Length: 265
Image (cartoon, helix red, strand yellow):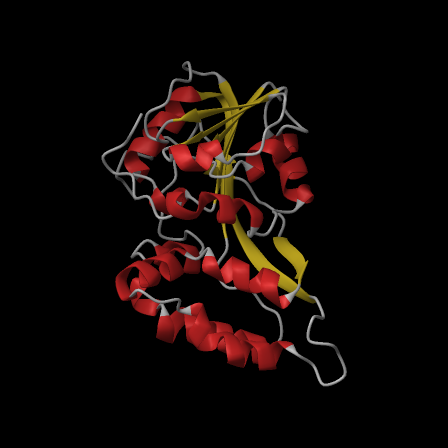
């Protein structure tokens, strides 16, 4: 099943995306499960490599992950109570009023939002929760962060899709059909070596678009500077570093948002 609005920036490196992206914190899933009216069925929309799908499986009897990319689904992690379907988030096979929790991990900005909002309202049980989260740049050390910012803005900046602005502003401009829930602050962390961090930079959609357009690797241009910044005077060059990505979470109950209309503010 395909969507005419689907913008596929990740299928070409789906396997790398699975192995080189940070993991969302377990406390996030526990909090979401606590908010859901029941724990029978969770829908992970735009599931990609299934990271959130398999984490939700520890809290829900059944999880369905959907993604418009067949390549992402083919590389998704397997669990006994997780099923995957190649479906756009705007048109799914879920029955009406069947889902307790809908999650969108770092994917909401790719959706046709009015159509997705209408679909979420259709499949949600009374009291069901919709939660969408996103992250932008990480923080490591001032020296490393400066090199990453150079890559982000000066090197691959022109190759970011326009939807990228929504991750930078924490989805603040996106209208969602729910009554907001107050949520605690969450952050992702990873302890990576420099090669692991370089592999992560390769998964950026702008990195992939730059390579396709220019025929060369944009990471190579900043790798020497990043290597120097990564190394501390009293530490070996292979020293792992703690990396932190602040998460922005928007969550709410789907039914009761009477003022919401598809395409409305």
